[in-house]
Image (cartoon, rainbow, N blue to C red; front, side, top):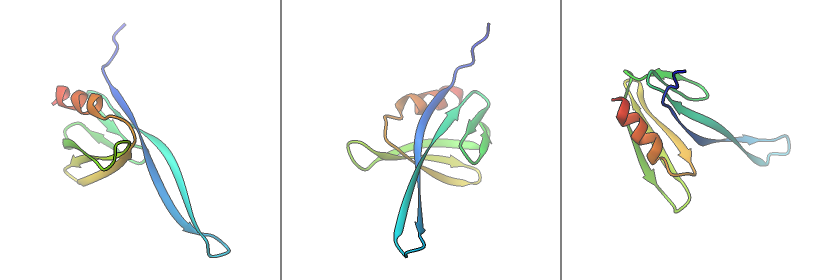
Length: 95
């Protein structure tokens, strides 16, 4: 049985909407960012590993930060609330 190495991290998207009563509603959804030896998959997009140039992380508090996925299509930010070191190390092991 051949198990492929991969890593996963949960990220949060916040959507802001104005409701019927003109009140601002913030809707947070959680999604998985997964990396395998062939792809990086988000809730909206799948990148081949050749399209991903780098992964970086910038903490902005003790509990949260932004993981940046640098691709040949631009830089994609992901709000995360956990340590991304395993995800970054997995990416670098594939490159």
